[in-house]
Amino acid sequence: MSTVQSPRTPDIVTKLPAVGTTIFTVMSALAAEKNAVNLGQGFPDFHCDPKLLEDVTAAMAAGHNQYPPMPGIPALRDAIAAKISAMYGYSYSAAAEITVTAGATQAIITAILAIVRPGDEVIVLEPCYDSYVPNIELAGGSVVRVPLTPGTFRPDFDRIAAALTPRTRAIIINTPHNPSATVWTEAEMRQLEELLAPTDVFVISDEVYEHMVFDSARHESVARFPGLAARSFIVSSFGKTYHVTGWKVGYVAAPAPLMAEFRKVHQFNVFTVNTPMQHALAQYMGEPKPYLELPAFYQRKRDLFAAGLAEKTRFKLLRSEGSYFQCVDISAVSDLSEAEFCLWLTREIGVAAIPLSAFYGDGFDQRVVRFCFAKKDETLLAALERLARL
Image (tube, rainbow, N blue to C red; front, side):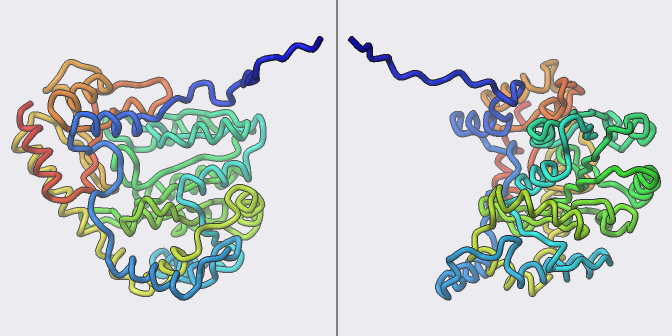
């Protein structure tokens, strides 16, 4: 007689034992449950330019609905290369050095998989965006955590230099910075350029907030610095720039030898990116005004929100130099930890924020939380009215 065994799912050994549900998902779900004003997850609650939607519709109607070329349609890569050249003075080959990606997150993991081998070390500067560390671990690399200076979140080059070893394969930098909203200076970029000059260390430069730099400062892309550009993957995001985060379209610029390796992974990762959006973005980029005016657009929102926080709350505001985030010190308001405070704030006050401790591997708590001000004015004003109850 044969015995019928019950169906059995084999055990799986996770490659990411420390990874659970992201804090962004947790806080957004709680905000929805409690009908809170969601200033936690970093996405706009307003519409993009209707012209961009018209361009997508026109592209679909014109029949641009099949696979595009693997690295992206030529018109969009041409537009990206032209923008980088005009803004930062560095010329990339649209054919060999620009690739359109399924958002910045896919771009970052693709760059890491292209260059990081098992046992390689990759330096991350904490606090850092939550995809960096799992990406490195999936590639078999070792994460080397170097803290940004607490309080100011400026790079500590002595500590970065001390972290460099013969096994260092890459360093990931992010400016304007998420979550702290600091912006690297020209002097800091040149210091990094000098530090890495005698090494073979690659740079992955997360520049998704490149068009959100305030108070007449400028974005110091690695493309401005030949010694960095020669070893760097630049990552940027159309979703952040054009208020269409759900489209998940970004791009990478890198020297041809690096891009050749990047595309080897990209073609077997997502292969390519949706066609009508690429045609629409190529058309829309013909007018630079939308991204050139973005700093003033978001600075006004920053100032509106910051003024309200200063007037209505006891939060201590940290300087927001770029991105669309405002960090505050909660010490005068609560004795709770950052994470506990954010949960309490969402449940009891009706405003969602993100604890900075979520961006540290060891959960370092410095009594600072992050708000996103990429919201309609009425959303920000509603949040301020609730926060005034603190």
